[in-house]
Amino acid sequence: MPWTFTDDVDVFLDAAGASLAARPAENTLLLTVTETLRLHGPHAYGDAAPLLGWWRGADGEVVGTLVQTPPYPPLLGSVAPEAVGPLTAALPLTRINADRATAGRIAAGWPGHRVDQEQRLYRLATLVPPSPAPAGRPRAAGAADRELLVRWVRDFAEGTGQPGTHAERLVDERIASGGLTLWEDDGVPVSMTGVSPRIAGMVRVASVYTPPERRGRGYAAAVTAEISRAAREAGAQEVLLFTDLANPTSNGVYRRIGYRPVSDRLLISVAER
Image (cartoon, rainbow, N blue to C red; front, side):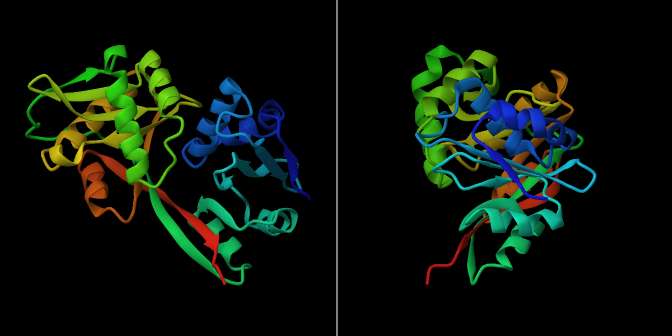
């Protein structure tokens, strides 16, 4: 069966939305990216049109999905092994973000490749707030915090190798939805974290940031635990987050407050000759 491609998010979701929602943890990135495209249009991430694709197995069920929003590399959702060959035949892939097994299958067909990043997806099990808690308290971010939050989101993006071009939009949306939380110590904001809107029962904690001079005091763990608690109490069935496997400190922090590994994702590229 061939892959089907479109630049229309509504057409894509009509075909593949149920498949994505059936496995919200594995498809968390595609769910949030397509929701952004649905709300803000095809140029939400850049000037070029998105590319969205799906593959149906012999029984007609969607068992492969792809979303690319240039300049970002293609994101692969759940992809059956038998869909990989038709995908690489259909698209001249040179860089992809996929689960470890799928990335390995694609890289096996490349003359060479490099791993640019390894991330681990975690799911909240039983929340264990830090004890003792650090000094201070959490509070919801508001409009008066916008300038600080935009700066911190850009700093977070720079520190993790991501573009920070949509910081203002992200901050405005998260403030409006109550999706940004600050930790304050003696009335001064010292750490932040955000949470994505709930889709298919899933939310994802993101943009956990503490300025360098404030690190090592437990603020990030405390503010992450707080936003995780609030998300679960608000009805989220899955509370997820990603970590960079190159950062053992953050991986340890999230495990201590109750997050458990789900799967790994790799960003891989064709090696330069």
